Image (cartoon, rainbow, N blue to C red):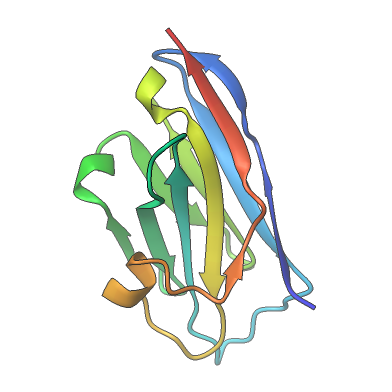
Length: 129
């Protein structure tokens, strides 16, 4: 059974940085797999929004509003990916979710819209002013 486990959430002051990690527990990458992995967030009272996606080849895509301060990356095992966040603002306070679609898939608009098979439980990020 595949489960996504996030870590790295917490509280920081505005201007600070955090790195979130997500590991696909129960999954072993195969060279024949083409995965799409991503990060999303949902702030209180707001809809979930996409931050970024990355595929098995390392190709990334970002929401326009997230470019510049957020960086998605994945390690060589292809089972752990990261979200580096910098210059954080109070409005970045949200629950951050990692998500993935594993197998023979491609990242694209559908995945960016949240069409992922697997989701983590979320990591709370709180930015204080």
